[in-house]
Length: 282
Ligand code: ATP
Image (cartoon, rainbow, N blue to C red; front, top):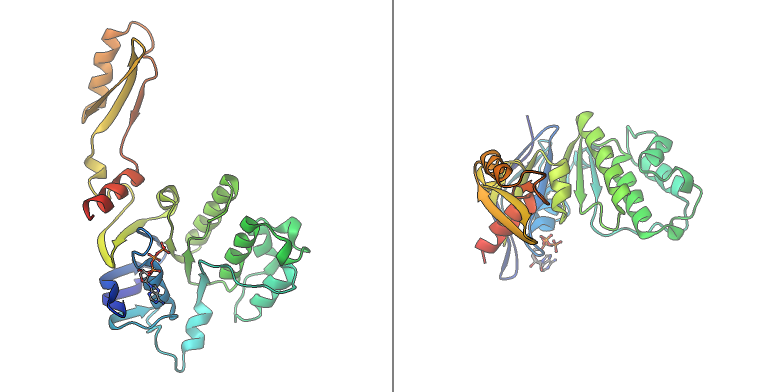
């Protein structure tokens, strides 16, 4: 069952076509990542889905609701979605625990505030004032505010900016846990390894248009791209691109009677494929 349906979405700012005919279907329970360079139209698209921006044309249904519609039912819509915006909001003079408890009060069926504080790894900071937190800790609090309402659909706009590697991995576990509970997650990120680690499907967007939608493993020609075999011989690194890396290594084993020095076999990463797609558009 689809949670988000977008058909032929257009949004312009004056003469700039920021979103230029986007079609999207996002299914319940999937993590869907939107990738694209700065200015591609990701935030504009996501904010239209969240109901923060109006569109010029196209059809948009989010949880069977038109997010642009502000009448009766709009509050119900807000109650069912969670949002982590790109910029952190000002929290005033409250502690971490007070902030989470306060936001929980806006929702009809919130998660337990203490559980949320533990889930975002701020248990030992709950009595600290928000303005004393580090940048990465602030960002975790933002994530906590996005999930405290127990949303069916969660929007994450560059959620892990400023996270240290360990916090990023903890965050990925948290997001996977939410997906396992049935939450649908729409994620924009510039970290390709984040999309690879989390997303069931990704859309690559450039200049307001979707270039491709696919799984991280199959995007572009990734699934069929050649393997790169690298090794060292006489102090020089060599490389070979092949669709039969096992045969290439078997041949190398005949040349070396011991370990093949500095042997690696690799395939195109999601980042390689993404950069190639964006370059081809230039
Ligand atoms: P980033 O990765 O940098 O966050 P993005 O893909 O989210 O970029 P958007 O913020 O959607 O991109 O912007 C798309 C285009 O629309 C950009 O060229 C931007 O300058 C322009 N734009 C965005 N918001 C406005 C606005 N309120 N008024 C005018 N132009 C805007």
